[in-house]
Image 1 (cartoon, rainbow, N blue to C red):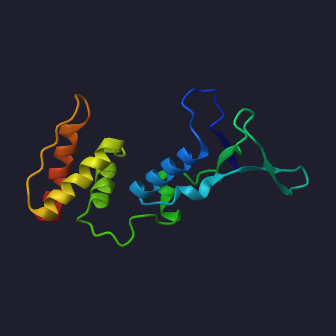
Image 2 (tube, one colour):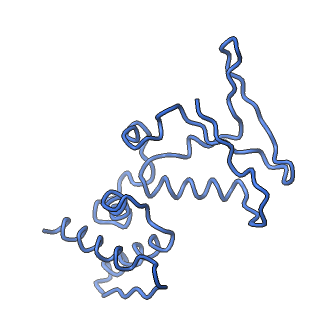
Image 3 (cartoon, rainbow, N blue to C red):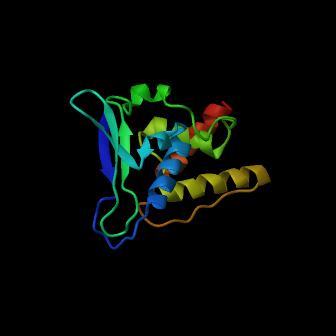
Length: 159
């Protein structure tokens, strides 16, 4: 069993457990697998006699429960993701922003940046309304790679 403590940092960012849950849900939605099941507010400690014990803790400054990302060894390797239950994309048609996000991940090896999610949603709204889409964004935001992968995705959908 692997236990990793999350959010044990002294920071002015004021991140809360809710921020962590929201980010794990966003990642789960975009990757199509339910990684939320690995977030726990306790860690599991195996006693010498083999009995597992749940240990709860609180952040010393905020009082919030400590968060742990807990998974069996090897579970999070990509070849084992098929064993993780699907999340968020079931029922989506391939011609969707979520389908494109999975294609983007598969072809580039990178998940969407937060602004890419907005772009993909915007592009699909434009497709549905049968209007053109213009994306104006900051330098080095991934516009070129986003558009190249989008064109490859659309060509693959309708060769």
